[in-house]
Length: 128
Image 1 (cartoon, rainbow, N blue to C red):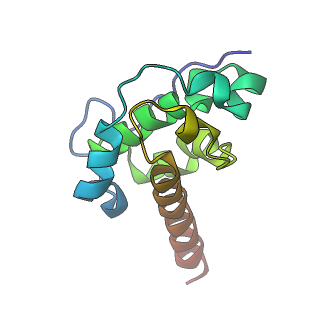
Image 2 (cartoon, one colour):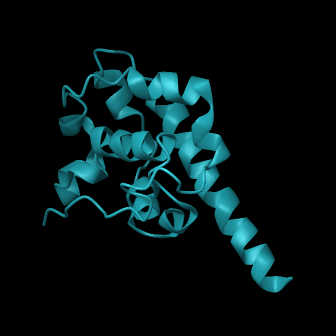
């Protein structure tokens, strides 16, 4: 059951709130290492089960790129964006298969931490 790419609230609107974790030059450099070859797809267990591009490293990197470009807003961190990122097992099988040497573990860790940071912040603000 293939799912389509999620609609991002900031898409087409470059004034979406910026998320600091995604503005880091090192994060952007890692994203740009991906050459979109797709050799990571067969190595990814969530892609093997779901068959959805967004549940594979290449699709998740596309989502991270959208976040780094300001096309992902805070609301998106609680929607399908987060679901696709959270499905990653962090097994690093894709990293071994990558001919470009993309440090996917650093990318996914940073992204998961950003999502969790904003979840906790939202929960804190609800309580306060």
